[in-house]
Image (cartoon, rainbow, N blue to C red; front, side):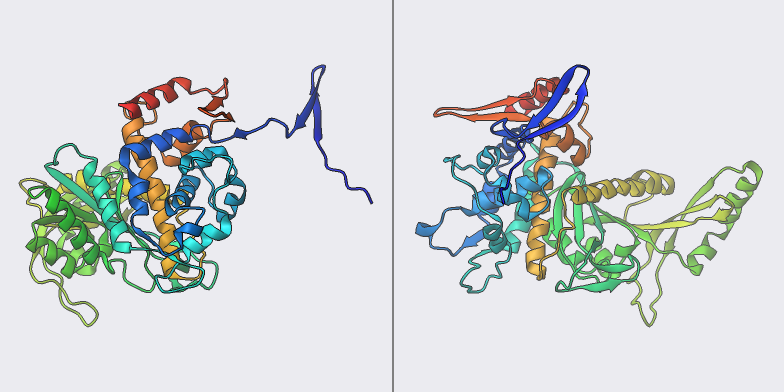
Length: 455
């Protein structure tokens, strides 16, 4: 039986012209804009320093692919929209990825999926096949270092946003637990941001409180920041899941201010009874949402399940009536009312933490939820890959897209409009020619970003 491969594909004619498609265009890439991301890494010096956080136990005389090449494949792949490690069995032959990975011999392929997988699965113990491992502390320190380096001068004040999210699990991964709030089996990673820059991405099991481990991460980050900027004012911001006495007491003893959500209860509702009544009367008169703000000193009592607070703390309250029902909200803070009155504290400072939800959403655009390996350590490694891809994309946004129409764009938009450019790649002895599509609609934007990154 003769097997025939289809070489031409006919489509409906366009007017009098026949349409025939063939796979004969030569070396063409859909990632012609990726060199902007590479230029961003040259500015940040991120991936070379990330490679230094790894221990390579392989015999270097028998090694074809360096750690830097392999982690560059993974990080750039995620940034460009290739979430699966299997994608690299084809991408390893793409000269664009060869350039991104820093390979001099572009006719030689990069690492395949099996080699990349062995790098992710290293446990730090002696193993015949998995001889690459990483130092978690070094990668954590690198994230904060990149943040500090992004400032030419020490800022007067910074706000650290802390939050958590769920990464659904669909297998029998280590540390798999069911979470009632999210109604699925998941991991519960902890994220800490300052503005759009990520300082911490810690994978955690889902059988813990939302604040589990957050104090240790905050202590580590604050210590590193204070070493560089001794006088900087630091404000910690988070929802009610992080309103814990141990965390607030540490902040009060270490010159760190905080503004944290406080869960509602009957005692708090009783304290703002007069304000709640006033808001209800306003709603009855206008049928419009009504808000009345107040503040008071409050101390959580010790119960069988909770230890209570060490002292009284300032609580700002929003007594709101909306859609025919009460909607009270509370925040606890160490900030003085002279500096932050109750309404401004809630509306301008606390509610601004909602922007962190956008930052977490961007992690999913970079496939942070691809935690399908068997062990927590390997899944933490995958979380780091996505985080580093975000650092590169965030750096491109901060350094290259400043003053442009995409200065505040999500990473998925940046990828689509700036990185996904069809291009023909021609490799000669002295040059790599990247001939991008003449019909690319954002050529002026590309030129401006290129100019910004070259400064």
